[in-house]
Length: 120
Image (tube, rainbow, N blue to C red; front, side, top):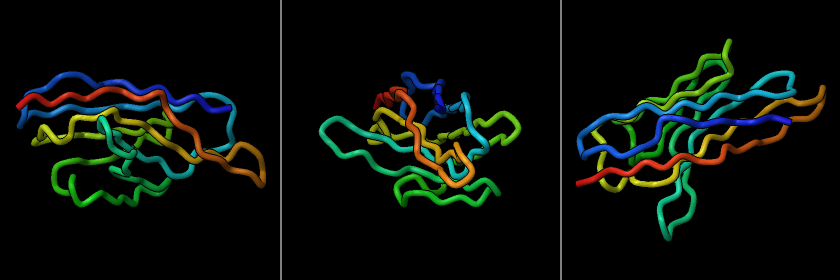
């Protein structure tokens, strides 16, 4: 099993910055891709950013140029630096990872979510 623990959410004013962290722990061989998703009230969960084990990244159009995803492979941790925050960024942010848990088997895991509220 893999546990993902997120931290760093909170209340911030529009235009401000915040950094989310998510650390993976438990029993696994390696962590493959990692990602951040978010879910605003009344909306479906959406992909925010992804990062491969080698560091290649992708972003949703809505956050390009404002958010930066990064990871520390030695600590199995992924970060999301969020700048120029907008009210529409308000959501619960979820960490996701794909972990190799057996030689020929990988699966996805989710964190419990951390709330970000951006006040306008």
